[in-house]
Image 1 (cartoon, rainbow over the protein chains, first blue to last red):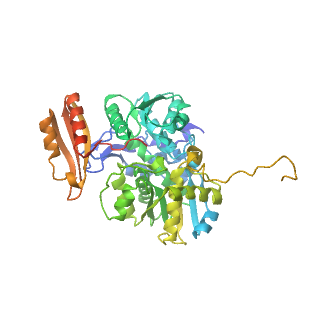
Image 2: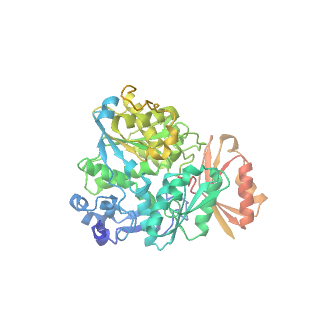
Image 3: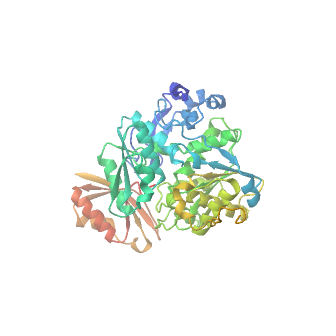
Length: 413
Length: 79
């Protein structure tokens, strides 16, 4: 792919700066994530008037076959420098699964095949590290037990940046192999998850590193919008009627909702008459339980689920995800560990897609929403499957059939 | 002088306790509340602790023993 095809080159003024989501205070577009006044989260503030003058369906369609075709709506100032092939994953019409669930127009947005590390994190990390390099950073970091670590380590290797990955000390070696192979510095912190969270927050404050989900978070999180952009384009420039999104920090769901609404605001799609529903594991459902109990605040929980990639007990964007689901008149559902495994198997059996546990949760929740009639059979539905099953094989190892053993003879066969 | 931004979540049984007042007295830290939502059954407060790093450390450890959840302002960073 030629770098000139990244279409952001004439839109240098598209980012105005950062803006506090709570009090609206403005900041320059630097590595900052918390409002100094009210401690609210910062978000990228775009110059939509400038963007509107340039953006068009045609301009996007002529862009690269990656998430960079939407560069006009992404928080980078120059052409991408890393993660050039992330995104533009298949939107699969899931006829077989749809038939089983009684849904006539079901699609799977298949991020199990994202480049290069097979999860949606490749989207957010491609943006985060491109932006980090624009800001002059030479070292990147993250705290992760899986997908995020894989992606940051891979992109840092490509970009030739120093990379630090923080993990809880008790994480099994097998879990980190997918990150270790890219030769980052992996720091196993002797302590529980709370201890690791706290240390990383302090490290991010002390060291001049681009901590992708701390000081680079406003840019990083914007990468998730591309899941909405691609879905709309792949459906022929329209929003679906219903989307089902796994909820961990809440950022993905919030940004998918934002992405569709941005397209509408810019006239790229006619309307967003869409419901957004969230999927959580029953063993870590702080946002789903707030929804079900009619609360407008998130009560932290201690995660206990096989869906570790979405096990965030006190999600920073949970409040905003809850708000998006309410605004769009969507719903929340949860899946038990057993239902999650069944969800993984169902998707594999019907569509030939092997998803990780978060995908199992999403499919199980999709099934429940269909059974309860919350999703009606005529609706165009998109379920977001965000990571590859090869990463969490242990979840299904005891749930698959035995092989048929025979002698090497026709008689035996 | 150092500063550390934290979020404290209160379970119902701790709502009535003046926890922030107490750590301001037990340790040499200045507590500076920026945002809060405290209700009958739950609550959270986001605040900055300013002081010597060792005192901040002790204040955070003490908060943990008082039955509230103490996290960095970013909350859960491990993804």
